[in-house]
Structure formats: C-alpha cells, structure tokens
Length: 164
Image 1 (cartoon, rainbow, N blue to C red):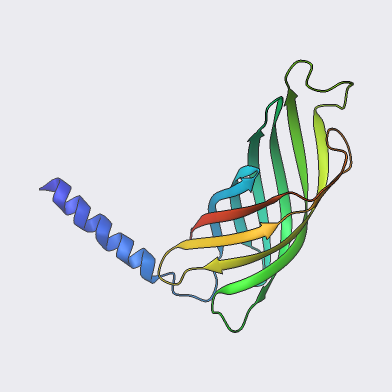
Image 2 (spheres, rainbow, N blue to C red):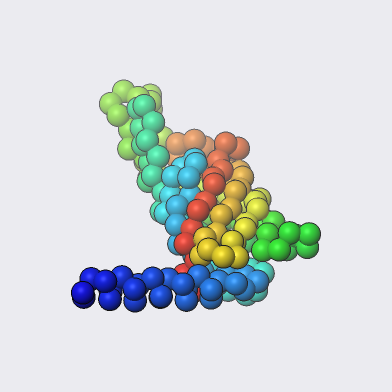
C-alpha cells in the first residue's frame, strides 16, 4: 500500500512540475552536450537574454584523449515566429587537458591547450516538458598547446533538463 501511495504522490508531483514549465523562458538547465566533445553542461540565465554556461567534457581518439572545462556567455535573441525558440551568439574560454599514447606525436606540444571559443546556435525549450534542446557551432582558436591555431569542427546538440 505504501508503494502505491508513494507512486501516486510522485505522479502528482510530476504533473505539477510539468505544468510549471509553461513559461516564456527557463532560468537554468542541466544536461548533456552530444557532439565534439561530449560534455556535461549547466546553463543559467543571468538576465532575461544573457546566459552563462559551464561544461565538463571528454573526448577520446586513437592515440590521445582529452578532458576539457569551459565557460561561456551567450546573448539570446527570440525568433518571434516560433515561441520559445531563440538564436544565440557568444564567446567563451576552454582549457583542454590532453593525454597522449606513446609515440603518438613527435615533439613536446604540452598537455594543456587553451582555446578562445565563439558560439552560434539555436535554443528551444518545450512548453509541456521540462526539456531544453540546443544546437550550436563552436569555432575555437587554440592559443597554446596541442592543436595550436583555428579549429572549426566543434559543435554540439545539447539536451538539458530544466531545473525551475
């Protein structure tokens, strides 16, 4: 009987939480960025149209792997013809910590790279579900370490759970 009561209470709470997401924007969300690289992401709006995002990423290739941390600021602009959809641009900084297999690369390029990042993307929050999705391109200029120079192949599809 206790299990049934707990199940009904949980269902009631979920219904209440889903109905609370029928707002124009969301305040914060946590989830995954799926792409290059795969990352855990936390995004929060510090103003109605300005978001801050932090991530922890991991990527493995044949010969090396890296872990990355980064932060960014993003300016969101609504698309009037589609409710809850915005396009955004922004900038960020990422630190990439590399681990090389033996003899993968000749010379010492260091195990730390710093990257200046640009952001261009679309962001959508569902009205009836506490889910946010975004897709973006993140061109990065590495100022030091492995991969020194411009990298245009970074971008992700993010799926996040809206926290409020």
